[in-house]
Amino acid sequence: MADLESQRSLSGLWVLGNNQLVDEWKRQGVQLFSRDPDPSRLTQRSADFHKLLLKIQGLPPSPDRSQLELAVRFNAGVFSVAQAQTERAQSLLTEGLHRALGVAGGAGDPSSEVSSLWGPTLRAVADGHLEVGALRLLCLQWAVWLSSNRLTHIQELRGELSSLSVRLSALEEEEERKRSLSASDHEPPRLVADPLRLTELLDVCTVVARGAEWLSDGRPADALSELQRAFSLPAPRDVLAQAHVLSGRCLADTGRPQMALLCFMRAMETEPHCVSALHRSTEVYRQLGNTAALVEGLRLLNTALRLPPPAAAPSLTAEVSPLSAPLLLGSPALGGLLSAPPAPSVQRRLALSCVLHGRVSEGVELYLDLLAALQSDPQHAVPPGWVQAPPPLQAPPPLQAPPPLQAPPRGAELYLEAAAALLLAGRGPDCWALCDEVLSATLDLLPQRLTLGDPSEDRDRDPLDVVLWAGSAHLLQAHCQAALEDWKQAVTCYTRCINLTGKVCFKTHGPPPPSGAPCGRPGAGLRSLQALKGLSLAGRGVSFTQRGQLREALRDLQLSALVAPGGVGAGLWLGEVLWRLDRRREAASCWERSLAAGSPAETLPLYLQEPRSSPSLDPSVLRSRVQSLTQT
Image 1 (cartoon, helix red, strand yellow):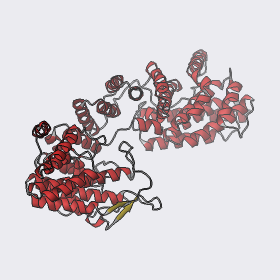
Image 2 (cartoon, one colour):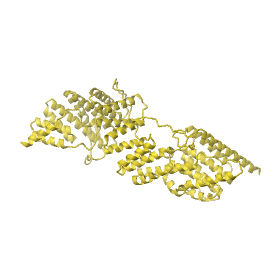
Image 3 (spheres, helix red, strand yellow):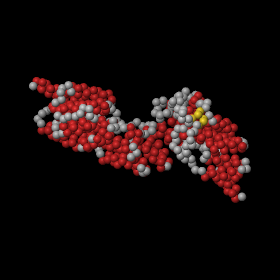
Image 4 (tube, one colour):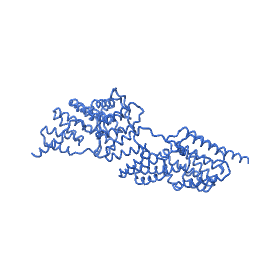
């Protein structure tokens, strides 16, 4: 009898200790769905509940203490999940199932999968005093599986989980009724998270996670149907916004861009800082060819990415819990679908879009702001593969030693884009200075000779990229000289570019890739190299034409047409040289082909596109020449 009274006294102390820990946690004010709970508090509370659980387990399991043990086990498991310690939480659950089975007189195979233990356990505790505790652990099991992206396990128990909320609600009400009728003043063990509210959160998060998985698997129609369920369930705003974004992705993938835009708009109305909705909107605008909306969307996205996320508003009525929707929705599939590029990448895309669509001055300022930001803040978030930008234009000292080839200076591409934009804006000296920075950074990396494409050699495109960067810098400097009509210096710069491209040799096995083939290695590098060589030959040919060296001009322009066919400017100047050499039939044929040619199917980098600053020929004059020739 004394032992029994002692155990009851211990049980009372343990209930008191559990409730004190719960009250202390709730007083700290960590709100439900909070974005950033303090890790140190989570760690401390987790350790406290685990210590209490060890004390309770020091005595053999009994019906009197089992409810307390299940409650403390639930609390300890919640904090383990909150710290992403799913294996520890699963161990708590598995052990709890075996102990509950032992108390209820059931039997389970210790070596069986945990999912197969739930059926026997729930049947053994049905209609007993342990049922509510077991259902709370089932809620915790759901959280463990969802946070570790084990959706198949959740599907295996879909019957039990679908009725979990209703069963828990009925049992909680029954327990509350019994306590109100009882004369006992003993308090029940409290919980750090309301299982009913947690079940609601788990339900909608599972719908979103499953929709994301199906969308990633190429099943947008099934994913869209599943995601529609989320809008009829209780859910926090950020989860609803994610469901809207994913629904928009499904609609975009099934050829309904306008409806996709409507979903993205609803996502931003639900969660104003939903940058993934802004990002996906710009992708749809790009597909639709809506230039004005694309530029405006990129501008808004660039601004949003540079603002800190809004702090969660405090709520006096929100249930306090260490679990949150971002913690439960951490699957790689969902993260990839909802990701947004970093702010520097968006600003670069915005600058490029402005330049390509006639807003050259605005694009130039964006490029220069980006270069200045990357230089002034070494910790500035930069896309993978980028490097710290060289010093600004105002005082260009030598560039710091570039990184080794394993991490090539991808900032060179940004510099070249900015240089091309400056050239378009008529700022030749600034363009030249940026190109000098690229040349100094790549000087020690240029190979004497480069052979690519041999499958027996394990090579990548890094050495070729260095050649392309240096060659593009020489090309832009040649364009600068051409804009100044310094044809002698232009020929020199174009020749430097041609000599660099001559260092590269491709070993091909089989036919070359078709023009519409996806860009890959080395296909993309070969096409860029062809464009670089074609532009430099065409530019030198035009320069020779201006100097009256028509034979040299004809040679270079013909080579340009062979290396990079489809260049409109090169074709027109080739016809002009032929006309001046009195080969007028050939000139007319060349002009007709060039004037009828459309835009190239493959978009090249800004610095590898035909220059707008070079001397141009009036198409109407050329057409009149062709017409007069055909009439004779």
